[in-house]
Amino acid sequence: MHSGSTGVELKGDIASKTLNPGDVVLVQGSVEAIENLNTNSNMLVIENEDLDLGTKRSFVPLYIMVAVAALAASNLLPISIAAMLGLIGMLVFRLMNWSDVGNAMNIPIIMLIVASLSLGNALEITGGSDYLAEFFVYMTGAMSVPFILSTLMLLMAILTNVVSNNAAAVIGTPIAINIAQQLGAPIEPFVLAVLFGANMSFFTPIGYKTNLLIMGAGGYKFNDFVKIGLPLAFIMWVAFSIILPALYL
Image (cartoon, rainbow, N blue to C red):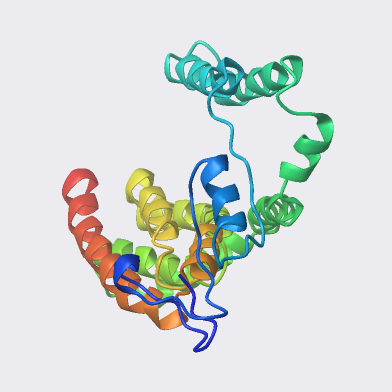
């Protein structure tokens, strides 16, 4: 319920609230109930949307999704092939058309992933990852390998909240491999440190695309992500800083 007079969202039991002129209420109900509100009350239905969940056809996308997940989980098909077959099934059953496919594609996200992969390849081919790895090892040369591993994961956690987690992982992985090789340490924990650090993207709204979605929908502020996400990221960083050396070093 949104108050038209004060411009704020009213929370709590709506039965205890008094409606005033200009208030906006989100209502869910049958078609008859909504029409009754529009004709037999002092309320005006501004916009309505029908939701049909009763036909057998509406469950076909669910069956297709389950089939795709089952094919991928059982290793019968790669996830990319299974997903493509699922898309073809949606088109065959006319549950969507080619325009829906085009509209569902997020071109900026695709370009970001492509650019990140290109940047990662460029760092590896030009020797940039070697240089960054040498610089990192030089700056942390007096530290122990577990401490270096923890520091790398912390840097990835910071980077992923500035750029996307995909970009952080693609950029950080070749650098992590070079760091491990220069230290004479196993590669696996350093790659895992990058992957775990790159997924600690919850203490800024720009860390991950879903953060931006819930920020707009929930009316959250930048500080809300910091208050909740930063302690959570710290707990995960400390935990993985202990677990990874214990398992691999």
